[in-house]
Image (cartoon, rainbow, N blue to C red; front, side):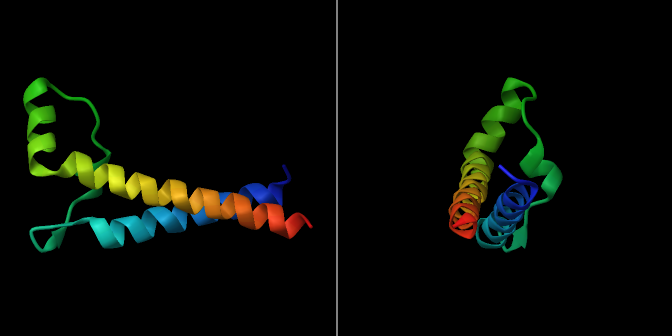
Length: 82
């Protein structure tokens, strides 16, 4: 894999994450902070609170958008080589 291909994949994955945050990052009319989305672990109470409030589902949707962007980047990189 060349540097150009890696760059295409990284840019598409980042665009997927940004699009996922724009679509799924709103909660109660405002965007959830990045600290909240990126906080993993914690004690059982914090994990339960994130699960009940929907933060876990929101994070998963945003990460899936990033993964989809990465797949699109891989496809673009493969077609650019031909």
